[in-house]
Amino acid sequence: MTTSVSSSSCSSAISRALNFKIAAECTTSKARACLIGLPKCTVESPVFMPVGTKGTMKGLTSKQIEDIGFQIILGNTYHLGTNPGPELMEKANGLHDFMNWKRSILTDSGGYQMVSLLELSEVTEKGVQFASPYSDDGILLLTPEKSIEIQNALGADIIMQLDDVVSSTLVGPRVEEAMHRTIRWLDRCISAHKNSHRQNLFCIVQGGLDMDLRRKCIEEIVKRDTPGIAIGGLSGGEEKQVFWKVVDLCTSLLPKDKPRYLMGVGYALDLVVCSALGVDMYDCVYPTRTARFGTALVPWGQLRLKQSQFSADFNPIDKNCPCLTCKRYTRAYLNSIIKQETVACHLLSIHNLTYQIQLMRSIRKSILENKFPQFVKDFMKEMFPDANYPQWAIDAFASVKIEL
Image (tube, rainbow, N blue to C red):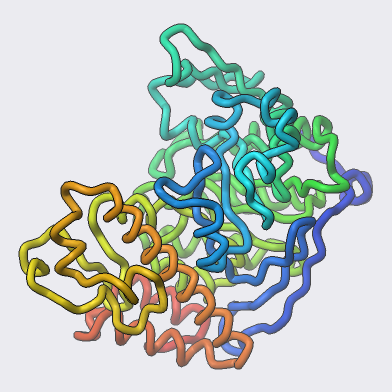
């Protein structure tokens, strides 16, 4: 069972290295533009965080990520904790110095690997035991305490509690068990956290697609008064009609004066919808992973540049995109090298990350100017020129009074 605590006993338990300010709120929807002051820099939200699993975006340097304009990136505790390991990270003075990144970092807890590496893991109350993918005989027991120990060594500005993660499509008693265990593990993470004066520990809402479990989880975790709160356990193949309703419920119940982080979300439409529902932060491997498959993200969808139709197309990916790739290279050039040269993945990653940050900047600008509903309508018209909008998106926007 979950251990209940009073809000007064937790309110002073976690000191903060975060200053949160709401700069503007949409007068129609729940969208908001915020400033998240962190030790390394101030992050403007809504914000998308690219994922550097092992301290790097595949094919890109830290300087290139900085030049694109990202203020915060994500690192993976499980992989960095396994190789190169926390001892080396401490000697390197943390992940910032190790990868030469001077802006903010968020590290996940390793919980997601319970799903992504399911065949290699076993979950108990103590923690999750992994068979290492880096060696034949290596075993890693990732407890809440060990996750925090690794993240303290990594030195990220935002660190995540270890949560008990199950597939988003799972139903039944295992979902409730995971929700209660996530709360118990949160208390252990709080007790283990040694650097609250310079690292912000975020808790995570679990409960699957069960609205009552989500409510119960939020009721308990808000008592712990962490500097920020994440919504976990989504974006794993569940129906979109259920997805947005869970997000909407969570943002309605979460405190207004803290950043809200929706984990694992990165599709353009999802970012716009969930920003309308009041989410501040996102992360996903999607922009760089899809680049490695030869796909470019554009305001009207995707360009699969491996296809022969682009072999003699001398236009840039997007004539309105400010990235280096669009300024210097054509679709035909990218088509010619995409199956043979790794530089093609590099160039497409630059473009896709630029697309993501331009999208988030446009969302933020429209909120600041109180024009977000019109932005949504313009975005949808460009993404779906035939006006064949997904019903789930129509319903999600309508729930916050944006009619398409």
